[in-house]
Length: 296
Image (cartoon, rainbow, N blue to C red; front, side, top):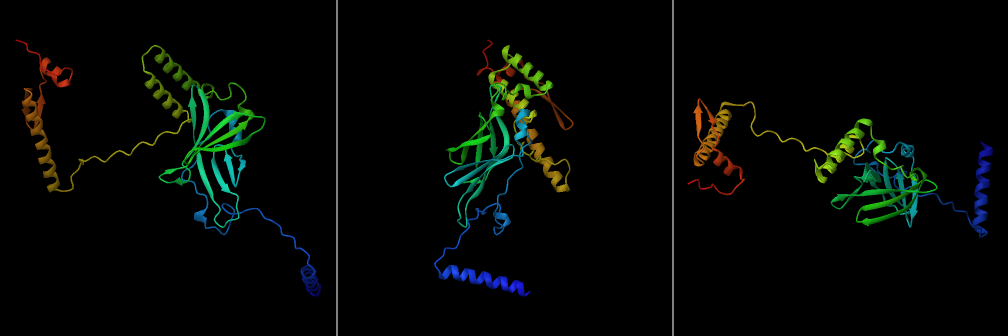
């Protein structure tokens, strides 16, 4: 115990001598820990992803980039690109509210002319009435690294990532990545387009669906089916009566419309059997011509 007290006294005397003699105390700068690593920041104010990244996809030789991150510093900002995960931005400042944000989460590939032309990171932090998003361009380089960052549109970023993994002329082709079944399907679609059996628009639509099935594009969320206005069961006699009156009014309206166009029908125990229009009437009702020809 006495030895500990003696050491504390010696340290105090050393510091006192340094101050009184005009000596300079060494100040050690510590790295900025604002953002993800700052324990003083509330958990809810740290980076929080809106959605989960899509599964790893695309050329198999690029899958080795998954789980790695690459930094790029420009001015006072540090950008971190984690392939198949996300892109983040961190302000290199000792301000108490230094900015850290998500610029995009891995979603899907951009594909043009049988080539992977970029990686889309979407659904980043809010930016006005939309979310930030980033397109990552892959170019040939001697080593894997981020080389540039820009913002061509507000809240839409562009990153250029160099890597020797894309230096081969066939390294970004889409067709070899597909399964044999999807390759055969693409061949059939291409043949149909060559024979003019489908339009260019139809061809592109089928390819998009094919790429979605391969997991290269993110499938658009289907809108939830609207609940039928007419229930198959009735909660009360009153509701049943209301539905019956409504359906009867619709039937009467349809009967009146058929009569107006001289279309015959037969009514049998609660149902109307449609007889069909004459050829001339049918031609007029389809809208193939704007008039009924004079047959006299």
